Length: 127
Image (tube, rainbow, N blue to C red; front, side, top):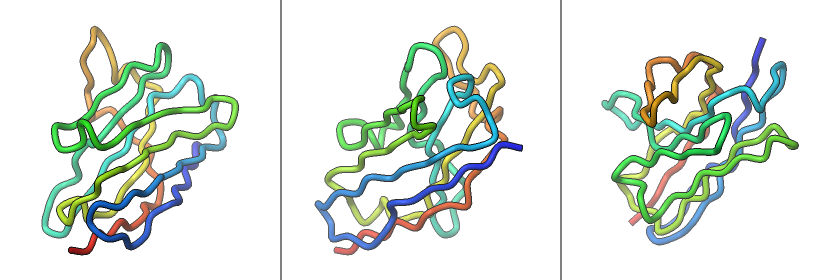
C-alpha cells in the first residue's frame, strides 16, 4: 500500500513563499508519476503541478506558471512544490497525488489516473 505524507503548509502573507514536501512509502517511488493538487472551499480538486516518473517532464496550471516549481528527489522518495509570490486565491488544501499508471503519455497528462492521495496540508494566504 502506497502512503503519502505532506508537510510544509501554513499561514503566510500575500507575496510570501512556502515549500511543500510529500514523502512516499510502500512503493518504488521512481516508478510513480507525482503531482500536487489543491481544493479550495466550494471548489473541485484541481491539478496544480505534476512531474513524470521517467524524464521529469512537468506540468503547471496557468495559475501556477512563473510562481510555483515542482521537483522530485527519487533518492529521498520525495516530491516538492516551491510556491513563491503567493496570493490569497492560492488558499486551499494541497494534496500530493501519485500514480503508476500511464498518466503521462505522448506529452499529455491524464489527471483522472491519480488514485493515491496524501492527507492534505492547509495553505492559507492572507491579504
